[in-house]
Image 1 (cartoon, rainbow, N blue to C red):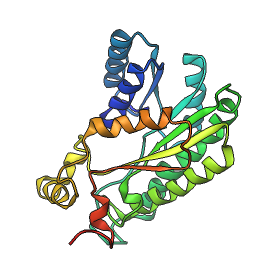
Image 2: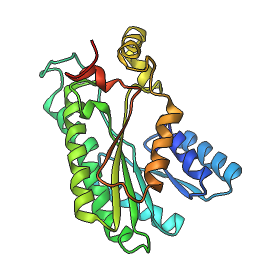
Image 3: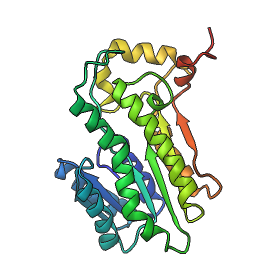
Length: 246
């Protein structure tokens, strides 16, 4: 799990349920350690931090082994990392090929690399394991921060279905698809776009962070759900689909 924004709140939700947690951070060790200290103090769980760049295959592999070493096992993976940048809508030239490849590495290949290392470990657990990916409604619409992000999130969702089919019944695999989250990243859309997205959503508000984080707990507990996409977006995706209200 990651140390900021949605990832930090999801970490806290799982700690509150009694789960030991390994927090992955990319560069901000101080924020990650502060979160770990808070979770250990408030919830009396084991909490460790580990630096890893999920664009790098070897670091994804090491992250799994670190979790097993520090926590004594591996039951649940929350794959929350990703990459994009803001581009001009519909402009296929606004990202370089290298940036498209970076999106692919972060939003697709990182999941493959994590699962390749984790699957043999979780399959041996008495109750198997759980893999939950953070996707986006960009993966089911033609919206989002960039075309590359939307396309690679869609590919990531199809990969989740293959994981669920291939590794069941031992491992349950699902994805959470948030809409507009007003995290540090989400605020970069700017007031005009944020207000327009709120107005476009069926419920007329952003995706509340707490509601979105609760979805991970729900999927982790639900032993009858696998291969599913849980959309938590205040009805925003409905505004992007042909069946939307007019």
